[in-house]
Amino acid sequence: MSGMIDAHQHVWDLAAHAQPYLELPGNEPLLRNFAEADLRPLAAAAGVTGTVVVQTVTEPTETTELLALAAASDLIAGVVGWTDLESPTIADALAAIREQPGGGLLSGIRHPVLIETDPNWLRRPAVLAGLTAVGAAGLSYDLVVPSGLIPAATHAAAACPDVTFVLDHLGNPPIETTPDEGWVRDIRRLATLPNTMCKLSGVLGEPAPAGSATSGDAVVAHLVPYYETILAAFGPDRIMFGSDWPVCTLSASYAQVVAAARALTSELSATEQDAIYAGTARRTYRLG
Image 1: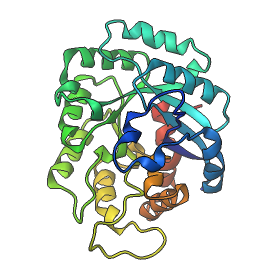
Image 2 (image 1 turned 180 degrees about the horizontal axis):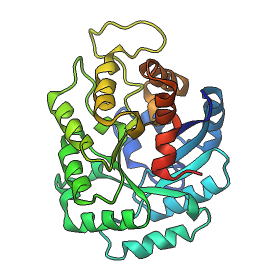
Image 3 (image 1 turned 60 degrees about the vertical axis):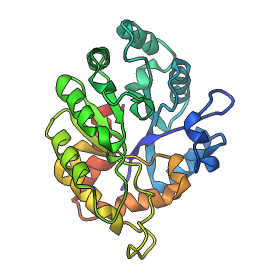
Image 4 (image 1 turned 90 degrees about the vertical axis):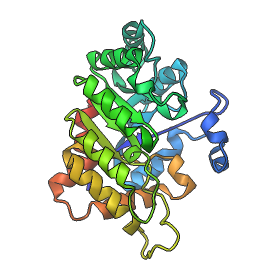
């Protein structure tokens, strides 16, 4: 397989921006700088020729920095940045971002709903107006939500049919012996909307639940029911691979994450695999 796109990776410099997420218990190994130069040899070894770098903080200057980084990189093909969705001047803000060095590499916007205390944040009129502006600018919107808010994400996607919504990390389901029935139901409902996509990301390094039978280097048996759920719901043309590097390194190496994805998708046709590993991301994020 050649020309793989990693549709979800991060970089951060702790001196440039505080990273509150990294200070949560269990994330201590991530409390250091991670740069594009660190990812480059890992991507090359895995056959990844392009990536999409995704925002980590709700600061507009980070997006400007990511665009400049992408402009100087032959690895980063697109940027999912951040802007204030509730701002009445969001259209102007998006236009200003596009005028920055590398602004043409802006592929989408993301706001981490995980940090919002209001469970109805994605239903707010101001947020829906902001999402509409994102779509009008020709950009997609990445949904990073706790699994319980997939219905709110579905509401937003239904209310903004001209916006392409990309669900990060399968909607962050807890990896258990069997998938939660509510998560399965909510994924299926979201996928009925044609303007929704799903990233095969965020779970690929998750260890098997205690008591699960595991073997081999790419231990994916516990992930199969989750993968099969999104495959049946979205189909390969609406699924894209993402490593979630360096967050994935809490439990797996970059090579192990890629191997897990390849093991899960091994029975698909070459055309279907090409969609998951390149085509869907290129189309959704308008990558050159």
